[in-house]
Length: 92
Image 1 (cartoon, rainbow, N blue to C red):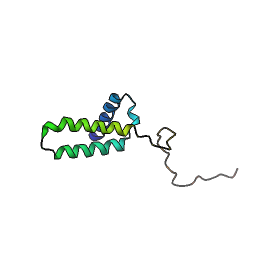
Image 2: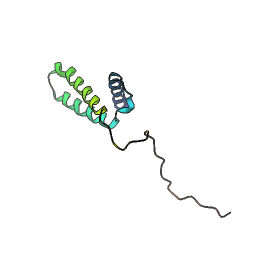
Image 3: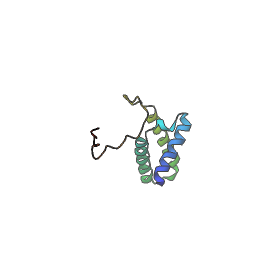
Image 4: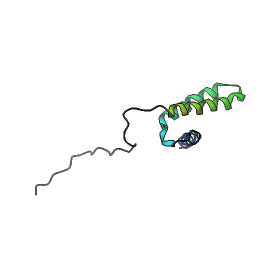
């Protein structure tokens, strides 16, 4: 739960810097970028490089923001769950 909120917070900060909506950034892509960059930062022993690594992470999030996904014409919504059993039709 904490990791989810931290990813969302970073997405909101990047969106504020890029002057766009946080919903324009894909959560899954943002999570993968943050995961990759923080794994790379953990392997780095020079702690003086951490600010530049975090800046690179934010730049990569902004570049992913500008990627337009074709075929998306509607807002994101939660799809309804399929019914387990069919409805019984009454004869009346």
